[in-house]
Length: 368
Ligand SMILES: Nc1nc2c(ncn2[C@@H]2O[C@H](COP(=O)(O)OP(=O)(O)OP(=O)(O)O)[C@@H](O)[C@H]2O)c(=O)[nH]1
Image (cartoon, rainbow, N blue to C red; front, top):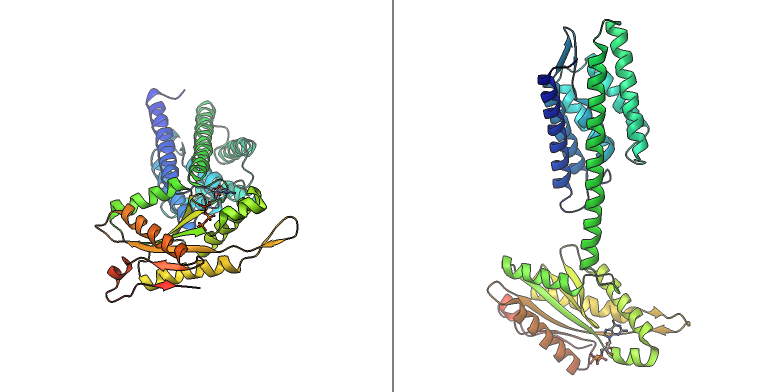
């Protein structure tokens, strides 16, 4: 039977496998849940971590006889294939292959097992059953290989014992990563829900406030475009709240399409929306605002009863410059919006603060 020292070494191997894979999985899931569809660099990184772990495990061999030893090196490679797909599996194998003698019988054995997992694309239909089939497959292949090379003069009890421990380790790590994946998915779903306006499906007030606060903390200049749907009360009063909601959804959809990745749009409250841009160039800001105004004006909303509806928006533009209080910048956008309403609606008004961004820039009022 295995001595107590080899049990300690096995335990260390299990801990290392679990710790490295789970920590790297957690890190790779920081901005979005990591899975086999994730960005290439993440899948490659996951594979490289597994490859390095495999090398460590290979160095920790348990010697059974003079020419027969056992290690857990295949574990991380199989696990990353399940969670990161073929790319992670392949990267882990490439690392292990080049740093462990390349064309060896052991590497051939690993290649056959990984090749089978790739063939059946285990990551796409990942069910517990696939893992258990893999464990049985690895066990049978290993026993067949050992008996064909070493005959029956092998300490079978120890070999079977190590094989069973390896299987338990694989099951443990698999379920732990699986749990982590489910947990991360839930966290991200909740996070998106908490930041999204239920009606318009764009960012809500809370996430706008957070974004504003971040700008203030990081002292990063940004543009602020506050827009308000014109005569919205009349839409509600004459056509009903459901049509009003429909209008809000359409404006939200337009804003989603009109804003770039680096910009941030959300529903500020009621029929008011806020767009925050990373640019604070006054000309660009005013042209973005004008584009939004035009798109809303041109948008035809088809109602359920066949009628068509058009709405317009008024926009106030200001900017935040480092050193300012961002609430003050917002207030300036609000005042410009108020002025746009006063000037007859369906227009863009730039705040006088814009002149601070570009010397000599004149106060802009686009009357449509
Ligand atoms: N359908 C619907 N209406 C909303 C929602 N939130 C706020 N409102 C309505 O939006 C209307 C806002 O009206 P006002 O602030 O008077 O603005 P307005 O009629 O657009 O007038 P101007 O802004 O001057 O053009 C109110 O009737 C609110 O009830 C919502 O989620 N759904």
